[in-house]
Length: 574
Picture 1: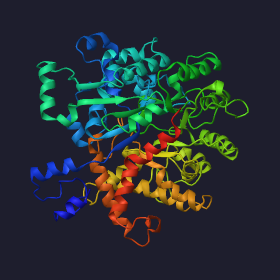
Picture 2: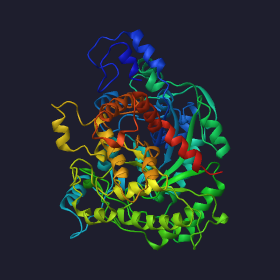
Picture 3: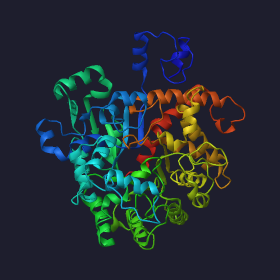
Picture 4: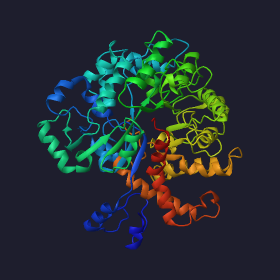
């Protein structure tokens, strides 16, 4: 895409297609936008999250207004978006943004909110830090003060917060409601979406019309369609049709199955089978762990800063698999007690290792390696991660207690070294199983520290931009090429194993220039520039495959879309 700038004599931009300081005519900008044909995919995001959170407890009201749909846009705080701050008060990847950004393959993750986000703690002497006691004293365990905080922080209506705090809130029931919501308009072509402006001062309709007029890319999709494929045949047909978004369903967190309320492991097993046999569409993969104890396996440390004041991840954090967890992950993969495929256990739901503690990943990889030797390949998915700069899982386990907010790897001193990220051993497993590494757009996960933010105030180029994304991709490539355990063929395979996995709508603090899906094209063009610059350095032998800018463009297309499409085609259930 940068060839347009070269042909017209413009310098290659660092941060935006039209921010070089030169005067670019509206006609040129229009021609540029029409020339954009790059397709995008996202391995981990939540396209329906804001709409569902906002409307789920007022379904009748929104249905009466014709707004109860995954297509409905909940109006955003555009000032927060422009500043690139945490995506709590603005929408990052709703379906309208997907449509207008040419996102044509989305792995949409269902996620019943973990109740620890909206409930207080009961700190214990000798176990908890002093700030937990202070937080409880100021905010209380439940009640108005905590409700107000969560409503302001997460932009969720108070009535919905009350539901999440209530005894009637059930993960399993919520998961099924969420699934039903995203299925509402699957396969339907809408003429135009609806817009809801919360607390509109002069009427919702007038406020919606104003948003649509001022920001059409963010608020208006016309003649649009998404489809959740019921089988591989429907998947292939949908992928071949650029007039619709192919939506693949995933689940974030095994807690979603209701592991906290199931008395017996058989109940959890039955629910896995219910998903496989009774749901109208398949689940492609499940992010097995999340932020808190799921009663099956250990979760990695994930909550930084002030978040740890409001909630504790301590229970079973950084631990290994429990006995019941070993059974459930096996059955999720369709394996019997002897680790053999069992048709009675249904199709294989793949496992995403993001959020899984290093100690639990160690056990899971032992099983995967055993099966790989037997000819049963289970691709490892790390759907929305960064590179940790750590060598092995054992190194991660040994350094768990060092995971303060800006803890970086000792070797490179620039990557987030928490065990929530992927080390060289993880990269090896992803490559040799032909899995997929989704690059998160969360600046903290990628390695942006407080010091980086301070330095970025004056330095050029800024690290909090395409530089941090390319540094993580480049480190993954180098990790594979430097690994003596991988064959030459496997090392080349790494190029097919990396894609976008933003975690948009997951309340992340995005890399500054790319706060929403609408900045995908900008990111892709910037990435071409970064790779093109580095490939010309003879020291970067791992980039020798690129002989020209066109070669770089082709791989950026692979990263943005083709790799994910090939992966889902190969592994989607029949």
